[in-house]
Length: 170
Image (cartoon, rainbow, N blue to C red; front, side, top):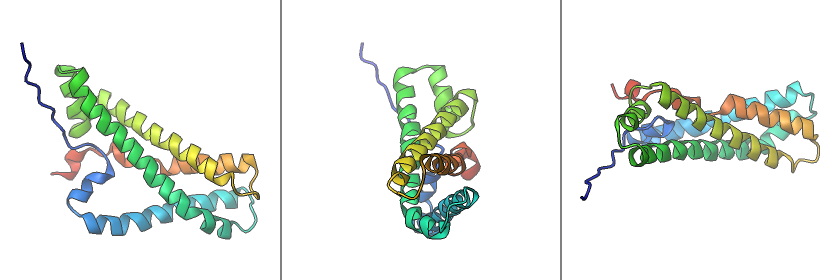
């Protein structure tokens, strides 16, 4: 018996959903805002650690940090999109529909756990990639690198994934 299966792609929870409505406006505001946040987190981390000439060091690393942040956010968004596709294939029942609906419109326990995992994946990637990038600076100790990368991971993780798209599309 042939089973007619349709894959439903609901609106997923990520900052990229705004690109459909305001593509140029969003990027014009999103990139500088993201850069500013990354700059401030890096600068304040270096200042708190007592690193000399932290403003110049921050300026040197901040554009790379911003790119790492965008890359990590896209990986987290791809994780969510992958889960949304796989849920329909692996769980073609009420549980799968509940998870897909939770990821798309009204969060439930399953979807919140999946979203938190996506945020954690992005945060870990931010930590690892920033740590590798900062290792190239000979003036920073391994402990300073670890603390700066950890601050970036905690404070710049994509918490906007938690905003349900039902709030946006009202």
